[in-house]
Length: 109
Image 1 (tube, helix red, strand yellow):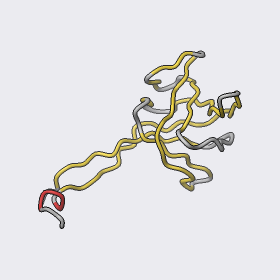
Image 2 (cartoon, helix red, strand yellow):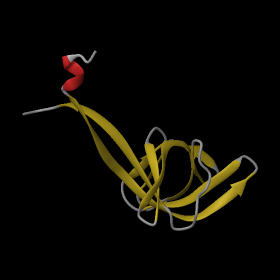
Image 3 (cartoon, rainbow, N blue to C red):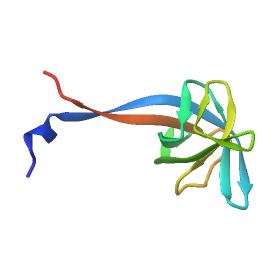
Image 4 (cartoon, rainbow, N blue to C red):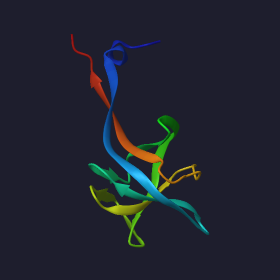
């Protein structure tokens, strides 16, 4: 049964930061995407999608973000960092990572 309060909600995807994979790196713990943030900032709690040749390949959650061998919570525009994605490791050079948030809000007439 659908309640009226659920019908009035709608989801909106808000892209907060695209970044380009400069070099994927393999470590004993897994694969890390070496990226440069091209706009905005990536936060460790964001959802993220991997785009290759204009096609969304994978959508998931940020696993961790590293900056100069230290794990950090966010990285801002123009900075380089290492990003892992939960349950995904097939990074390639020049792939795009796009961090986003899903916002639920009430429909308006």
